[in-house]
Amino acid sequence: MEDNKIEEILQQINNKLGFDIREYNSNDNLLEEAHERDDIPNPFDKLTLEELLFIRENNYFLSK
Image (cartoon, rainbow, N blue to C red; front, top):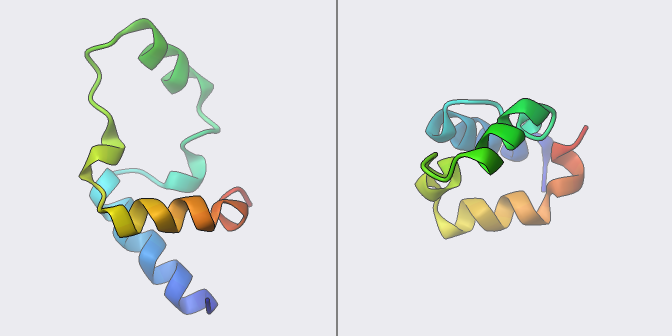
């Protein structure tokens, strides 16, 4: 997949989530807070199946 297409899809995903997915795992406090509270909605519920599959298939590029 070409870089422009990847960036375009990432921008769509980030717009839906309201945060940059590449920084999601870097915020350990967010994960600890979610572990302690079960009433926090899952932000990934907003994504389509295609977007979720894109994240899974391009995980290497997202972790840069």
